[in-house]
Image 1 (tube, rainbow, N blue to C red):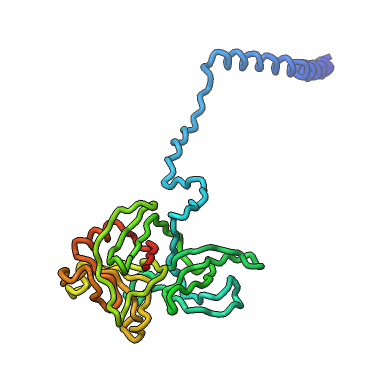
Image 2: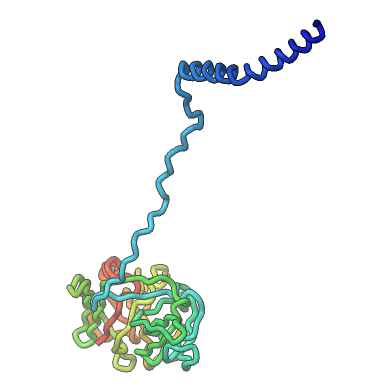
Amino acid sequence: MIAKRDGGRRRLVRAVGVAATPVLAALVAVVVSAHSASLPPAKDQTPALPASPAPGLRVPAPVDLPSSPRVTYWASVRSAVFARAAPSASAERVARLPTTTPEGTANIVLVLGRRRDRAGRVWIHVRLAIRPNGSTGWIPRRALGVYGMVRTRLVVDVERLTAILLRDGRAIFQAPIGVGKAGSPTPKGQFYVRDMLTDYRSPFYGPVAFGTSARSDVLTDWPRGGYVGIHGTNTPALLPGRVSHGCIRLRNEDIVELARLMPVGTPVTIR
């Protein structure tokens, strides 16, 4: 009996244990659920990320470059390059353009137009500071820097001995000038201002001198190529008059005022 009882008990205990398992699990679930319901809702312990800083550079939407007969573009020569007679790498070479002028300033060219070749490469038609005066050529766009823009134009009248600066077609400056003598006339044509210099030690040039793309047609052996300048003078009593070797002279107070109004890249008409 004992053995059987013990065995039955063991069997009974095992049976009760098996039967009690689902009940116990259900009871635990109820207790845990009740305990969870009594707790406050859990908070997210992850720290909030700081707000993104404002961008240091805002790139505006691209816009078309203004197109107007009163707007002129120029660009610096970024790498030495050959200007060619046509927008093609196989076209005849017109001139080799360095990155700097004889005065050590950035070499710039006046932009006249643009075109793509058959390979899709962009070429820029430019006015050149070479002989003969009025020469133009084509340069690959990659050899030039960013465009500069001016709204000014200088008109030099060698007959009336006056210089007039226009902005957007309106005269904003006028002054009497000195021009070339009969044996060394100031060349006529379409040119542009290449650079502005203020460090001349000689009072002959005054406080400011502009270099232009114009070249003397007779003084071809002059130092640095015989470029025509626009500068001040130490003999203002000679103005207006035909007193120079081809350069355009202004009284010092006038050249200083012109320097304030006329940027590099300005087209110059000498007529």
